Length: 119
Length: 108
Image (cartoon, rainbow over all chains, first blue to last red; front, side):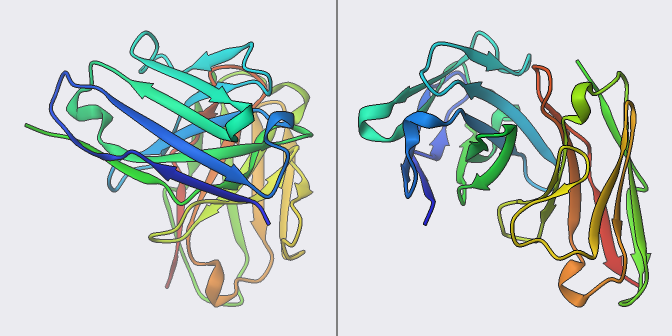
């Protein structure tokens, strides 16, 4: 069965950096584009970034462009999100999510990892 | 950027009633690349509908999606107790991908 397990969340000071990881299993990771989506406390879903199956194309929300970098290691079945210049507005649960082969909608979500930006 | 506006913000209904949720796009959503998700408290979202009207695997047929262009609807024909949750639409046809603000379906 499909599993996505995020790790790397925690508390970081404003201006700091953090790298999230997502380990996938139960499917051929290298066949699928992958997303990061976040949800600030008590609010709705915000798409963050997408990377194509081979890592050649990456797309970002305007709110994170230039600060966050999505990447993947298909040999390790792992997705990453490098986050720099963090602000309090980046505080959220970050979900790793798998696309469908039929399009970029999300057919499976991880359970999320909480990132708190606070001094 | 395609902005998605969901209405109403909150829908108060009783079990057995019909729920109609709307999602309006600021620009045409190409090829009906519109999905609906359900999220319950403390849980990750779950895919309900993709391609505006195709139910995902395992989703009961009381859930249906319709619409095209800039207007989309999620209908729950008869609410079951487990359907009380927050629902989000998402367009996935163009970057940046975007979500609507959500509609909470609560028990009246």
